[in-house]
Amino acid sequence: RLVALSDHSHDVCFDDEKRDRIWIDLDGDGRFQSRGDAPERVVPGEPFRVGEEGWTARVTSPSGKAVEFRRSKTVPPAKPRTWPETTPPAAGLTRTPPAESLEVLWQRYKDEKAKTYSERYATVNLIGNVGTRESFARLLDIADEDAELNIQNAALRALGNKAYLAFGAAKVAARARMATASAAHALAQALHYMDHPDRESIYIDMLRSGDSNAVSGSARWLAYMRTERGRKAILDVIGGPVTPALRYNAYIQGARNLAGGPPIATVLRAADDDYPTLKAEAIRDLAKLGHPQARKRALALAKVRPVQVTLVTAVAEELAAPGDARAVTAIHGLLEDETLHANVRKKVLELLRFIRAPASIAVLV
Image 1 (cartoon, one colour):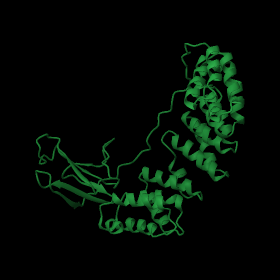
Image 2 (cartoon, rainbow, N blue to C red; image 1 turned 90 degrees about the horizontal axis):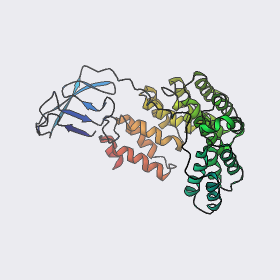
Image 3 (cartoon, helix red, strand yellow; image 1 turned 90 degrees about the vertical axis):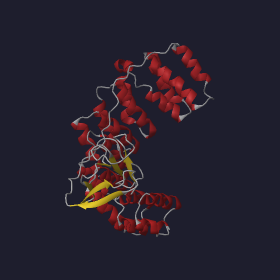
Image 4 (cartoon, rainbow, N blue to C red; image 1 turned 180 degrees about the horizontal axis):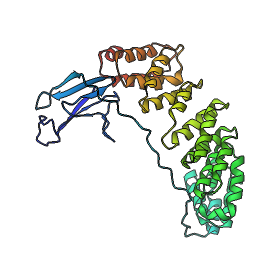
């Protein structure tokens, strides 16, 4: 593993065990984790945990050329990991009306039909900022009649203006309940920024619609509402008799954005799912939470033949973290599969580069 020293006593020596610190790349990702409680920062002479073992580290040379590691009878308790919390964007966006009149902006929109998306998007967004009945109607015209799908969706997102709530809420709600494809994403966002009072019920209807895009578009914004009803609706889809794509979208966009993240029971269920893409993400989440099942499942999946290409990277990422001989052997087995795509093989080899162990060096050579 990579090891580094930090001289907190500022004397260009590493002999002050009270202030100097040792850094160890415990998870083998080639970096030192310094955020939060800095789990890869070690106090010289004090036990630290590596897997199920206790170790101590001391700098044996004031110049920092040598660090001594010894096993310790004391095994510190594993630090509980928590899901990284997301801060939902505030609902009810009040937009500042533009200096130009709606007539000027509408003419510009018509004149720009041959221009790039970014130029056209800026004009559509300004029309949304106007906040009048007339601009609302213009946005619906763009959504229904423009030849470019991205501009149609830009118009739907621009409906997310609190000024439209009084007279446009019913129309936006009706469209959202019927939306499919990328329009579902745009309208789900508009409901949030419009601060629609019935958006929770609308999101739940979209979740239950059976349309993959509607589920993906609504699940995230429903999770951001932080309500028990919304939480239950998302988890019901993941555990219900729906298609794999719906389960995946509800998990990725919904469960991952819940307060506190997805419940462990939901992550474990997803890790057992027959849908490889969902299984791979669930293994990553188990690893993120430090759950012991992450390693057990990764080792088991590494033995499955033929290799499931969708799972290879997630499995290798989890096995590369401890970097012990058993894990490296399992990764080596993945590389021996001749059906493995060249790009996936390259990713696995890159992971092995971060493991400073004889077994990984033998594989790379």
